[in-house]
Length: 182
Image (cartoon, rainbow, N blue to C red; front, side):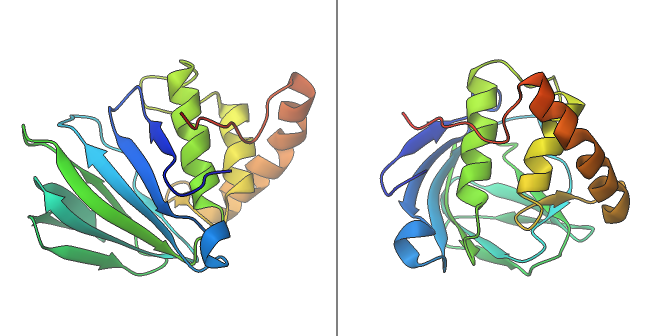
């Protein structure tokens, strides 16, 4: 479980995070992280946080956000707030590394989700799109269904798939979390 000051890195994208405040330390109210994003052509999947508001304030560099079909660029001192349930993703397409403070409220277990995906990246267990095996991804996404969801296929199809595949994943020895604190 992450705690204030812990650092994680995504070997695939180069993104680094430092936990500033965790859900455990804020009674579940807030996760705040320093996020450092180098230039990348990699885009995360379009996703939602079904029960969390998320935000990002750029400190240095620029971040590009796609939010509900509209792209915007945030520069130092600018902030975006994304309501729960709104489809989005972000990236840095500029040469300068982007530094932002990102927040999720309530925290739920999104810190564990980040730890898991960054650890899988570190261990070379993600494909070229940044996704683990379908069965393993099903286990992780079921555990974090209140934190994050991809927008396609429809949620009911995802949920049924996750419920069917998760027991198979347990039998295959997969886990739905990894620790990757350095």
